[in-house]
Length: 168
Image (cartoon, rainbow, N blue to C red; front, side, top):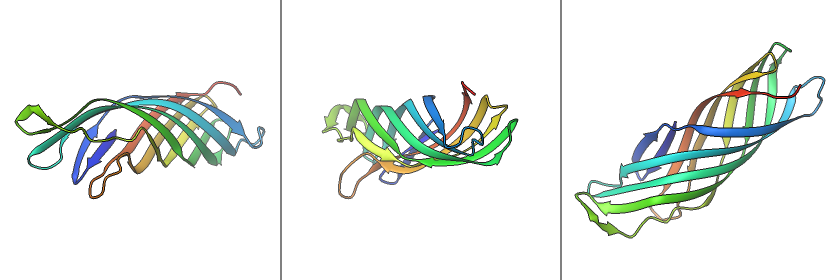
């Protein structure tokens, strides 16, 4: 679930996100502190009114690398509960970037410049069952990808995921 925020308007989009990552344990025997790095791909299809007369739409495709520190608060072999935080370095590409007057889509305004490089700060809580199946819940606060005075667009992300853990 991704919220795209422009001026005072919020558009909610639900789309899948693909992740792959590597965990490095500080102490492999205890496995309480983990350095995790994830690569991900995500997609947003935003379409919203900037004001009562103008409409904005675009598709955003994002590749991200997210280094993070994970701490297992409850840490047994059969069940773990963790919290983690990190920084996501994002590379986005855009298509169908359209800015137009409502009712006059064939008379477009100059498109909004959307940043290709931006960052966000995800926080995650999760559970690991039998060292293999992980359920996670992620929140990432507002992260802007425009640079205009008096106008900004941002993503705020809520996510739920299921991961399979390979290895030990």
